[in-house]
Image 1 (cartoon, rainbow, N blue to C red):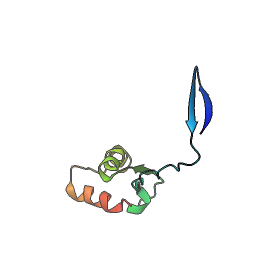
Image 2 (image 1 turned 135 degrees about the vertical axis):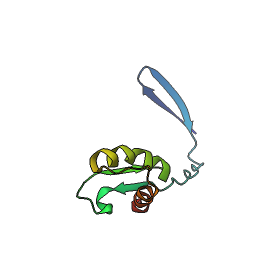
Image 3 (image 1 turned 90 degrees about the vertical axis):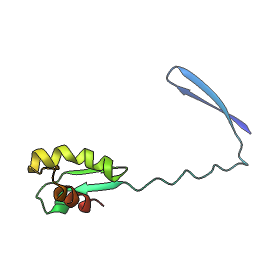
Image 4 (image 1 turned 45 degrees about the vertical axis):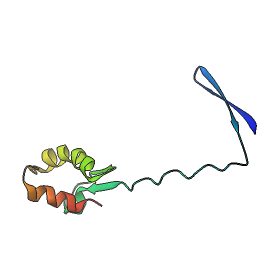
Length: 86
């Protein structure tokens, strides 16, 4: 083991590294969902990403309502947007 010291803003942290121990792999990240207006055939460069479909729908909602006058209260509009998510 050997000491390592790091200073972050006003705090100094000292820790030890054991070169014989390999770190465990980080839990695999979920693949993000992406929505692009052009995937709906719209001439718009809007693109948004989120960790899951529901979060992405929340982020896309305001844009499609104001920029494209789409009413998300209609299930068929929601379905169209969800199908465009990749």
